[in-house]
Length: 282
Image 1 (cartoon, rainbow, N blue to C red):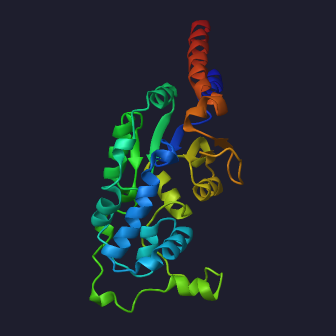
Image 2 (cartoon, rainbow, N blue to C red; image 1 turned 90 degrees about the vertical axis):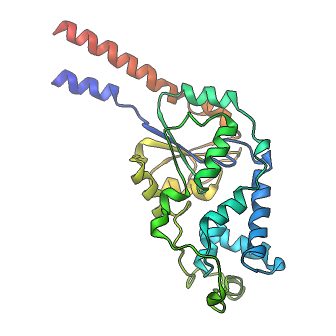
Image 3 (cartoon, helix red, strand yellow; image 1 turned 30 degrees about the vertical axis):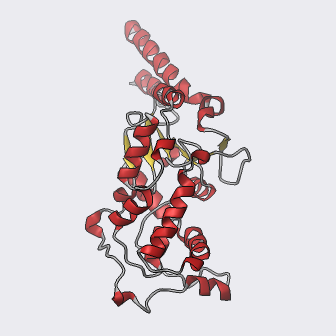
């Protein structure tokens, strides 16, 4: 048992899971999807919720800054949404044709002998489409998405109706009077960068943050991940920020930044050889 325990320590890998954001992480920001997504959100707010177009820019900025996503913010300040309709409107009109199969990234991911999971705030339909267009759908064990953290049975999403008139929290007015977040309503939507949402996602996927690496293009998400114990990699940036253990200009630079990920396989082979020799000696 003494020898078995010793070699079990050799076998134990430093990292056991890689957690990847999807949008603007596995494909570049210049794909055009992010810009179109922002436009679609604004159009939804005008067409579905009746918000004045002149208010969209300031409102979206505040909702995103304070709640992580515009949807989470809209729910917080009092709008009732049909989640499926929202996702269909916002993501269903994206230029997916701009995403091309990425054979290079596929080879990189498939060569890493570690469990890999997607963690996105987007819905499952969008994640499936994007991964398929990139040719990466079979590179990951699973996808943690909007529905994972916000299952339908826990929500009662409805279109905004007359009953909500006068019940919308004026977040723009709030910040025109103060810079404090005190008094802001909470949101029922769980999403990054909420630490409770991230911990819940890791719990559902049975991921140990202390032995996992988190890749994301958002500084806020990276900093939240760092606070809950994840090893963090900021993607799409050349400047290291607080909370980021590594920065990658492109996701394709994983091997240069984290060569130890490929050492895990060699460590396993070393363990197997040493264990075999030990049994022969015994």
